[in-house]
Image 1: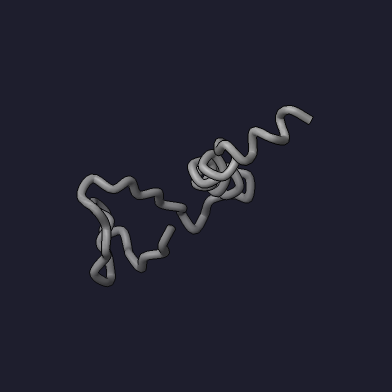
Image 2: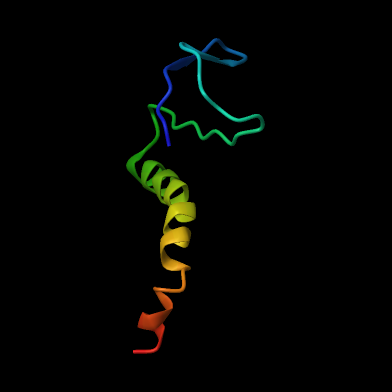
Length: 66
C-alpha cells in the first residue's frame, strides 16, 4: 500500500506527483470527512488480501489440527 498526494478538481482525482502503479491497479480513496466507522471498514478491506496470504499457507494449517 502506498499513500499518494492528490486533489479532486470537481470531476477527476488529480495526482500531485507521479505514481508507480501497474496498469489497471485498484486504487482506494479515503475521503478526509469519512467517519471513524467508514475509515475502520476501509482499512479492514485493505488488509484482507494480506491477511489471507498470511493465514492461508501450509505452515498455518498445523494450527488447524490442534
